[in-house]
Length: 79
Image 1 (cartoon, rainbow, N blue to C red):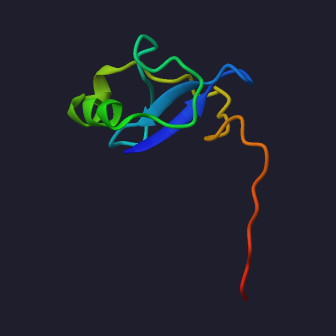
Image 2: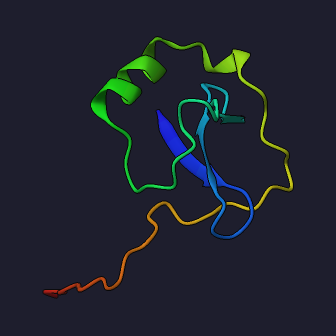
Image 3: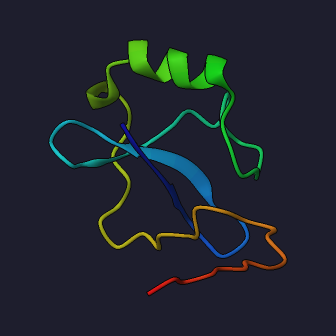
């Protein structure tokens, strides 16, 4: 399962790609908080859900960053 975030800047919603690569909006009633991760219970409920029954995300919708509120990313490369 591939999760996405879409919508206006700083107002992104959770979504997921179905098995055909179509972006689907996850129900706002369960996935509306702007946070960086889903709980294991939420992920398990998504696995049992038929994503094809959820509404499609508009094709021209803005894709947002997968992680919000991150102050700094530090990376080390060893080439």
